[in-house]
Length: 117
Image (tube, rainbow, N blue to C red; front, side):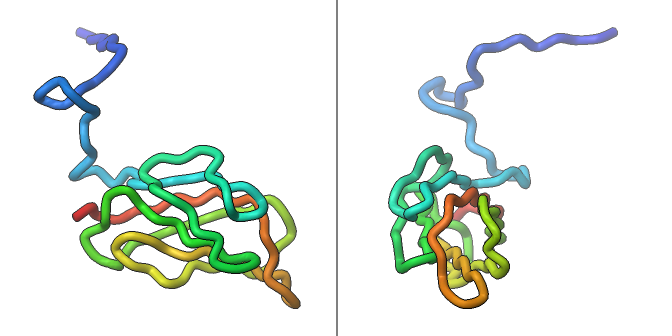
């Protein structure tokens, strides 16, 4: 016997908000930023973006992680040959884009996994 579940919205037990992911390993935050590092174009779980310096952005989350052992990943839209994350905390992480001779601002897509506090 097959079953079909058709719904428009899944709400929490009280019926007042979305269902919170707690035991799943889905991404807890993601965003797409502008090339100049000042604008969030689309996001989930991100409270703000800080343009730390040329080629460096700090991504701040709405809900803190349980600890700083988070796993942020990102991709960029050009030929930056060195990219890495740093400054991992329970509430943010920094992305760094380096061309081999200078830091460069680029459009970026990030995602972060970890347990929420």
